[in-house]
Figure 1 (cartoon, rainbow, N blue to C red):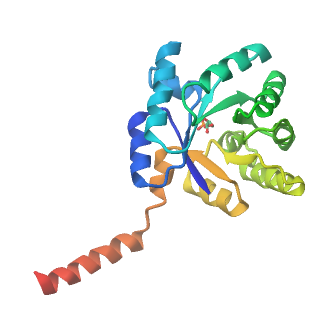
Figure 2 (figure 1 turned 60 degrees about the vertical axis):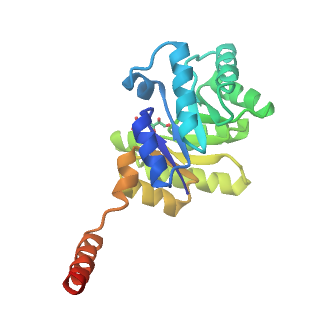
Length: 218
Ligand code: E4P
């Protein structure tokens, strides 16, 4: 399972990268705004800075919502770095744009996916990744993990190569259940990755090992 970090914060990206388990980054316009990044030049420089830290794919989202605008933005975004994947919303012109990009070898991440039907469309259009937002579904009392199961089944039935990128992951149970179901990728905050480290028996076991070592070695 690939681990992507869902942030535009360079320090958090560096920390996850240094942990040695980071496979990529996802951003969105809200995450860029949170870091105070504005203006095309600054946005492009920031994506480049992210690409310089990580070894894997970096999703950069288009702002346009019409076919021509999405194509123009996507074609500009991919000039920043080979790691850039164009993030396109699940709307009619977005699906058309994904097909256009996929026919030209430009990789895409279809975002804001909340149903299996949308995921099927994204795969048929040739998306590299599909991003079902499981946390946001849970927020409205729909089972986000059930959607991951449904998409896994559909994609396996037809051997679609689109990778399931479980997004809006909020906690370790989301992550682990996605791993059990077979999501290809999860994206979430740094805290979700570091929370995997924690177990009280690890802490007490290590304390005992160190105390026993000290008894003999001083
Ligand atoms: C996915 O790529 C999105 O950036 C993201 O996972 C949204 O998560 P949120 O619901 O925590 O904002």
